[in-house]
Image 1 (cartoon, rainbow, N blue to C red):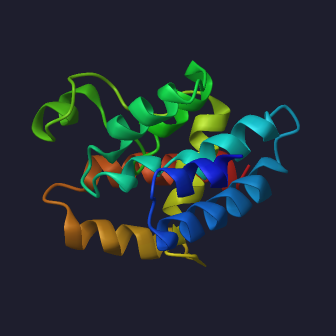
Image 2: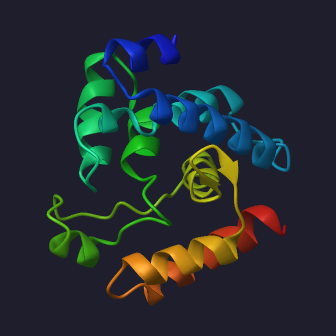
Length: 160
């Protein structure tokens, strides 16, 4: 169902392939958490980048929420899409990123799992946290707070 929606929205094939890889990684992470909602994680992981069918900028998460809402997805899936970028974006950071001023930090277990699975997949390949830190340091002006959130997510999800 979700793959058909991605195709209908003309999501680039490399983004679909990435989303499938994120879904697999998220499912693997979720095995450590019997309380995790696997179906919610599957839907959120497959749809997390649907906004890339319209834009590849940071606003793809907000655009993705609008698209998924049109298909009738509930707040639980919409929140995964909106909060999947990096290790989350704080309300303060949102001001500088041309986003609606609010927190985009993942809150629920399922949101955290999808966001971190996305961090640990580059294209369709699994990467480690050190790879992500290096990438963020090369791309972000002030990555320190993001890196702290990334490490905290990794400790919570991967080392527990």
